Length: 465
Image (cartoon, rainbow, N blue to C red):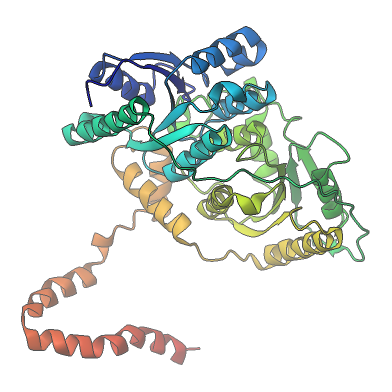
């Protein structure tokens, strides 16, 4: 495989840190390991402002893609997806009608992270490649420092060899994500028959909607009319946000963003978002996510670190677009709020193509948002949050502790270092009983009694009700 014919590889680097990034080190490894191939890398995330303003720079990247044999989408994880700057570059491909340069090109993806929802980010890039009609070969989810270990270097090498062989032999590739079907349904909101009293709860609607007459604008207005009292609406384009998260990690020590008072994001988040009892997010789908402005909002909230900075809030989401066709996006939305410790009450879309039904869904969501806020109800976490928090716990305890000291202090203070080895009673029981399993009669007796033993603690709890 190493002797595969020369090929030109265009690397689209999605790290806002450009060359000084973990992701690029993996690309450099490939360059050293496969010197027979030509790698041309573009720091599209770091240079997104230039690419937006300079159409020549954008055309240069598109031209490189068009003349390449393989496109490598290389990126770090930023809040369950790619960075907002990378997302913006992807949007430009469609906005500037450059899809043709990507069509039928072989593609592969490389993500670097601590494995926190890297599957969701790789799914997103896979779906984008499918939408561009590229020949997606596969994705490689590298942990940040895998490159330091020989076995992982060899595994990464095998992946690259198989990718190059697929390009060399013009291998067929399967499509994982079908095209999204956008309908032309026009939502016409009706009048609200009743109003939901907010009972003093602060309700904030966040949106990036800038056009009137759209389904999204109609759904926002219908939700607003469902409440009595003052409801605040904030448009993300009116918030002074100078740019996306830079990945500089300077917030790790004290949760203070490097942007500081250079823009208004921190003040907006602290005085508006953090103080709300109820948050409603309203956005239209753009490719396989919301807009890059929404992604920028989420990315910049990273200055609060790996902590549940929006815990206890009631959340509703309004989506214009075929969310039902994009399970990956739905999981990202559900996971984000579970990890935050908030309560996602409902997601209402315009997919039903029935204005009266959408009215009823919005009215019902308004009522539940306030009712749950009064009760301070948050549903139990699922694997989406339990697994994510265990990963954070282990990483912040070990390798990330020096970098994210604010997280470490929070985890200690709130008892998040709940490692299993602290359960001394269970450890003692395991140590004493496990050796007995070598006795066949003990194993049979254990199997006979285990079902009743499993429910005994619950029966005792029921007796106390």
